[in-house]
Length: 473
View 1: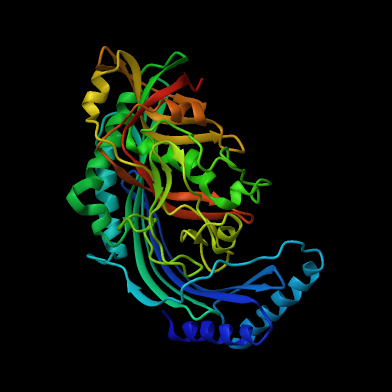
View 2 (view 1 turned 45 degrees about the vertical axis):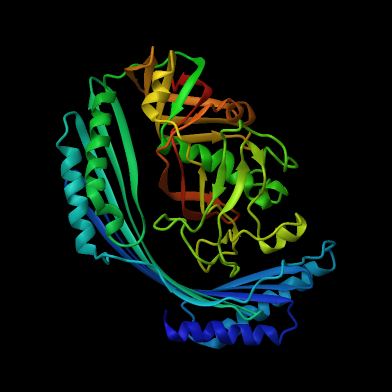
């Protein structure tokens, strides 16, 4: 962390404290990002971006105010931004009826350097990208291979008017890949994202990235000969990659307390289980949690953007809704405790309640045994595009490919398949969870106004339930 930027954050807290505010927190952040795009064994471009600045959140007379300064050159710049933010709160104070109280927070002082076994460099990710591109392009019927490796080196300093001082230094390394095939007028694409919080080890360990490149190319090639599916309600077995998106959309987002309160209804939706804490919302096989402490996932962090120390939060236990994800403000409303889920994309934005690493819990089923029990059904694999209603009640999610199950055996490969249902009916139908729990990287979750893209983890095991399958066309 730039020492001058950190000093500005400390001065900001001191100045804000003399301005009659109830509360103030400051995030001083800097990031270096390097990426490369490779297509068909050629480097299209490399990019380097450096960013730093300060985000300041104040609470005065029960009104939130926020301002940010990019690459501040002096404290006068920061002071001017604070003064304007405080002035803006006065326009709303007289109309504010609800008093904002924050859950009492422990004063935390810590410096954390996250583990990086092999520091990434641009030359390294170019080499990895070229190798993945070569693997994808070598498979028959592939007409386009696209590989986008990138990494960020981040430093975040949090300080608040209550005395917390927290510095977190971390690195994220990710590779995004797409394989596109074409034959006889039919085009199919399969994609995958690999990586996590850490260095190059996140993409090269056990040769996983190269195996993934081969797998998506092989599946894309096979899909040109795959069959469509006839619409029917049937048994479906969902692989962990597909489950990660299902968990994200239908279990994670509705768990965010601001959505439950309806504060995001205008642009991002609400929650289908509002008012159902303590109620059954799924089968007793369904266990769901959010856990920012899962190391190496993109949702791993020790303190959120309110300075709250993170912990695992049980959301659903044996089908019973237990908790929501809470900020210090919403925890007071729900008579609960903060869960460490307030996060912002960077210093330019106000923090929002966000998932960290939301997952369906592991089961004890062997996946092969899950399949053998199915007389007629489908395996749906790998997430694609979700379409969800405002309360996350009605949902449809397309998969990258599916396979038919007949008498316990996998038969036809299927293309352009959508899986759909209603949240309570589907989750009540879950009758098996595999022992193959997996966390997948999510790099493009959007929430808020203005929209904040966020990285995180989501995951779970293979699960079995009942839903409707149909063809995209």
